[in-house]
Structure formats: C-alpha cells, structure tokens
Length: 284
Ligand SMILES: C[S@@+](CC[C@H](N)C(=O)[O-])C[C@H]1O[C@@H](n2cnc3c(N)ncnc32)[C@H](O)[C@@H]1O
Figure 1 (cartoon, rainbow, N blue to C red):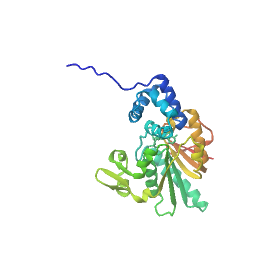
Figure 2: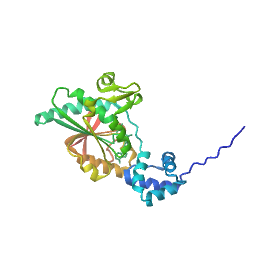
Figure 3: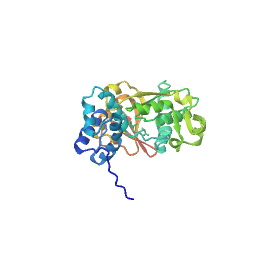
Figure 4: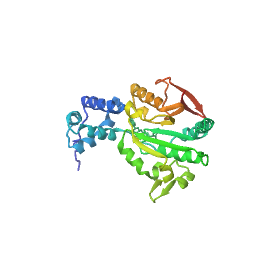
C-alpha cells in the first residue's frame, strides 16, 4: 500500500532566514550564506520544538521580544555552531609547532631569563585541541623546568562543559599516537579520560572572539591556535577577531590558523613565517 507522507515540519521562509541570520551574525560573527539556508533550517527546528513554537517567524519574535530572549540567544548559538574537532588534528601544523615554534620560543625565553609559556586555544570546541597541545608540551619540555598555562575558550558553553569533563569516545582519538594514548589517557572501557597532569595545564573560559571586552582579559600569550573558526565568519568579523587575537599576543608571539585559512585578505599586521610546510603568523 502506498502512503502519502505530508511534511508538517516548519519551513524557513527567505524573510525569516534573513532575520535569524542577522541575529546570529550580530552575536557571533558567523555568517550563513543563502547556500547554507537548509543547514540553518535543520539546526533551528530543534529550538522551535523545544519552545513549542510553530513557525520560524514565531521564533524570531521570541528572540526579539520575550523576557527570556537572552537565555534563548545562547541556546541558539549553541545549536548553530559547528563543533567538529579531534585530538591531533592536522599533524603537519602540530609538527611545526613542536619542531619550529616551541624550540625557538624556549631559546628566546631562556635567554631572557623567563621559564613560562602561555597558550590560547581560541574556539576550542570540546577541548581536544588544548589537551593535544598540553600533551605535546609535556613531551617536548620534559625536565626543562618550564611552566605551561593553556587557556581553552569558545563561544558555546555547551562544548566547554564537555571539555571540562575531559572524557572522550574513541572516534575523536583516531589520530592519537599510541604512545600518547598510553601516557596521557585513562582508559575506562568505551571511553578515555585525559590524565590529570594534562587537565591541570588547561583552564576553560567562555570567550566570544568578536567581543573586545571578553578578549581584552587575555594578554601576553606566546602561541594562539585559532583553527577552523574564521571560515564561518565574513571578512568584517574575521578582521575584528584577528585584531583581538593580535592584541592578546605577546610581541614575537605566533598565531596558527586552520589549514585552509589565511590572513591574506584580512590584515597585514602579522608576518607570515614558514616552519616545515606550514605558514604561521608572527606578531612583530
Ligand atoms: C569547528 S570548531 C573548531 C575546533 C578546533 N579549533 C579545531 O580546529 O579542531 C569551531 C568552534 O568555533 C566556535 N565559535 C564560533 N563562533 C565563535 C566566536 N564568535 N567566538 C568564539 N568561538 C566561536 C564554535 O562554537 C566551535 O566550537
């Protein structure tokens, strides 16, 4: 027998798409082009269901006029961000970090009589990136008497909660070398928990990269990883975020972007430096 299914899911009109996209953009810098309308529709349907709203227009009114609108705004951002990440993501970049940037910084710091390193994983999602950096630094700096502080931040409090729990499914560990699995994780059967000595290096904080007040609290950073987030921004929010990162770096500090990201059309403030086959941006 043939059954005709009637699709009763709410449809995102062009007008509601424009209004909701502007709200998301103003809050986070993330820009959804027309070609991503279907994605926004798919992600926002869950918010409508939870709020018991029938149309996307109703949701827009809720976000604009309801006394609970600020709380909902955070839920909206939590639900539209792309959180994909993994341990040891883009190994070639990580190699240039440990083989190029770290030895250079360690030499310069030692010459200046300093023995501390400050890192920032900006837009760290569920924490795999800052924990990877922590493990790599424990390996590289072993016995050299350096203290390490790593800040992990994200706009989404949802992912930061998960980062703080520091327990992961096997899939996100797929690129983790065996020796790191053995030394820096506790295996709980189906999941793995990051060892305490790595957790102790990392502090998490909610920071919106396009907000100058929130980023102002972060200063004198030696190395920033801001990977795979600028791709979701338009040029204007990219410029804003990158200027904030520049201000947060110490003089001579380095910025790593995602593999497919560049500062070419964004700013000339940084000097591009090549380590191995990776471009890193230095604050001069
Ligand atoms: C694809 S993940 C990247 C995670 C990690 N850096 C990596 O490369 O594996 C992008 C993250 O950027 C965050 N994000 C989006 N807009 C942001 C903003 N304005 N400020 C801070 N984080 C933001 C999202 O919440 C998401 O967790």
